[in-house]
Amino acid sequence: MARVVVDVMPKPEILDPQGKAVLGALPRLGFDLVTDVRQGKRFELQVDGEITAEVLADIDRVAETLLSNPVIEDYEVHVEDHSVSEVAHEAGRA
Amino acid sequence: MARVVVDVMPKPEILDPQGKAVLGALPRLGFDLVTDVRQGKRFELQVDGEITAEVLADIDRVAETLLSNPVIEDYEVHVEDHSVSEVAHEAGRA
Amino acid sequence: MARVVVDVMPKPEILDPQGKAVLGALPRLGFDLVTDVRQGKRFELQVDGEITAEVLADIDRVAETLLSNPVIEDYEVHVEDHSVSEVAHEAGRA
Amino acid sequence: MARVVVDVMPKPEILDPQGKAVLGALPRLGFDLVTDVRQGKRFELQVDGEITAEVLADIDRVAETLLSNPVIEDYEVHVEDHSVSEVAHEAGRA
Image (cartoon, rainbow over all chains, first blue to last red; front, side):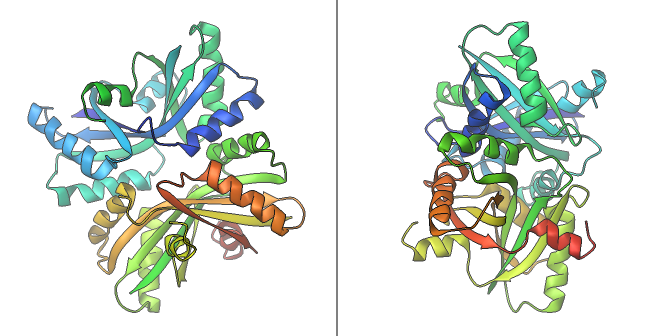
């Protein structure tokens, strides 16, 4: 059992209203060091068995056809040792 | 100038309909090794100046109050060397 | 052929960071009449055949199990004459 | 106090992976009458005071610059008597 992460972000030349909303709201929190915010999606996939090159190629195909719109978004696939929620649990936060 | 990433995921005990929809659609793509999918958000923040412990503490506060709902989501903050879109550009994909 | 819309919104008692970000960004646009913003999801379903009570009951089940998390979200199902994009086309906007 | 709704949908010619994932997952629920699904966003804005033509023009500007990306999304603004969550409350669902 392994975890594969697919990060999907709007391409640099595509406007990102949600990121812009976050950027616009930051000064009210007294935080003015951030010059840009982009908001995308993160998918955590639990995969049965070993992560071979073939499995990664399959996941790349899934990322391209089901998880992103390649015209307006870029994606990145990587194998992870842990998830956000596991880290949060270890940190006693969850 | 540095990039800080905030990953926000639904807590393990919270139902995730969007992840479930992706999981349910995978078999039609002939891909049956994935046993679970969780969908969250990824924020890429461009930060002016050096990333000190104080800046990271500020971003942690932003993540907790503006980027996530701590009751139903976990988050993780990390400093990155590159973004999804830069990797895609380097790979000639974008 | 008919169009059925499912609106999914965070329950009133659930924090909505994305709505809060939009609210926080509005003053910079010189717009200060908005006192609250909530962000949800809108699904437009194209349905084959007539929309009977049975079909609506089925879509209600889909809304409850696949389109929303009933613990943190409310949903509403209604039959529409037109979609956002059709209106935009008619208005010459698209 | 009034509520104004802004619906934001991907333009018809833009691929919508999230809608496609929902569509692909429907047969597993035994529901095969849906021929297409599009997923967009719904914003509910609480507005102080009367909704004049001027206020609606301002909200239209907010919708165009902060709530949507006009290159890939269409939006529609309308004044509502009630929200999804109020209906859910009245129905005893929330």
